[in-house]
Amino acid sequence: MTYAALAHRETVDALRTVRELWGELLVAIETPPADVWPPRQLAHTLRPDVDGDELLVADRAPLVLREHPAPLNVTALDTGLAIERTLFDLADLLAAVTQQYTPLDHPRRWAFRADSGPGSRAYGLHWAALWIEGRVLNEDTEPELLPDGTLAAPPFTALPGHLLHEARRTARSAEGRLLRTLGLDARTVPIPDRACPWCGGELLLHRHPDVQPAVTCATGERCGAPVPLDERGRRRWGVHELVALASALDVGEWQDAARAA
Image (cartoon, rainbow, N blue to C red; front, side):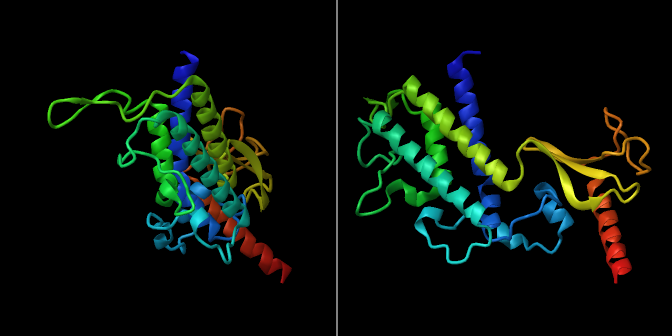
């Protein structure tokens, strides 16, 4: 695979990840910072009291254009503001080169911010990410057939190699920061203040942006938990067993509190 092909694929994948998880980040801004447990992918299963209406974020204004009087998760807000500004600035950079011949009234033209208004930034991160993706994929760079049968000049020019590299670097950086903020990056972390309900061993949460979370017990096969062993001989709770593990941990926490009282 050539570098250009790899850069196209990685940039598009990163932009799509940011778009797909943007609603999660907006919810996180209005939610106290989450602990390691439960994993975010299962939060709505293990925390049934979460209001599903909180996820209806499509009509919210861009973060950089609205006030934030009392965010409950400042880290999530900082991440959102940084990603928006980064992608907006990237769109400005790509537009300065690829739409030099695009008519000012063209519906696909990226409008720069000015004293009179925010330009295309008013449409939010989703629009910016989609627009950048189109430039990365060199969409709309061929002559277009008009209704009268004549050919019009392409709306955009092809993206130069150095800007493809910059788009790849920026998109992957935004994706990585978003995944880290949401606790979805590839990492194995101990679950704090929770021990295995069957043997008292250390519980490890394994998370990855492309794979469902799992938990293992460090005790190994001597642990009596009713779940299978993984390839390293550890008891492993896959995505289907995590609800049962959460229930067992809740019972154990209640029993510990009762003994302490």
